[in-house]
Every structure is written in C-alpha cells, then in structure tokens.
Length: 127
Image (cartoon, rainbow, N blue to C red; front, side, top):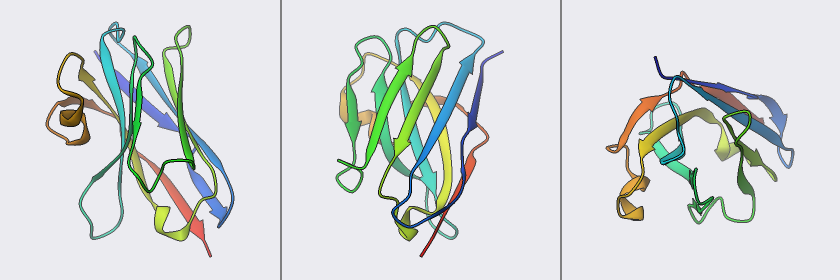
C-alpha cells in the first residue's frame, strides 16, 4: 500500500521559513517524479515544485524560484520542500504527490499524472 505522509507545516510569520517533509512508502519510487501542490481556501490546487527522484532534476514555478528548494533523502525515502521568505499568500494546504516518470516534463505541472497523494499539511503565514 503506497503512502505519502506530509509533515512540517505550521504557523510562521512573513519572512520566516518552514521545511515540509514527504515520507514515501509502499513501493520503490526510483523512477517517479515527486510533486508538491498547494490549495488555498476557495482556490484550485496549484503546482508548486517537482523533483525527479532518480536524476534529481527539479522544477519550480516562477513565484517559488529562489525561495523554495527541493531535496531528497534516498535512504529515508523522503522528499523535502524548504520554504524561505514566506509570504501571506503562501498560506495553503500543501500536498505531496507521486507520478510515474518518463513523461514530458511540462505534464508534471498538472494534476493528471499524479496517482498518489498525501493528506496535506497546513501552512499559515501571518503578516
């Protein structure tokens, strides 16, 4: 049974930092792409960043570049999202997701390829 478990969310002041974790279990994810999405109240779920587990390639949306950083720990089967310089507009539930690798990279910016999802972790940034 595949499980993705996020942790690390919380309340932080604007300008602060948080590190989200996504612990993956239940299968081998070496060929997978791990994505982070977020959903604010009343808004659609949106892409944040993605990482290719095998090659370590990463992709970020423009608003996250320079502020968010993805990394992985192969031994722990865990992906991390380091978030710095947080803004109130970053407030959302953050979700980790996994998709099979091998597709055109642009497709990983959408939700369609992701078969496995975590339960989400709340990030609240106060002004």
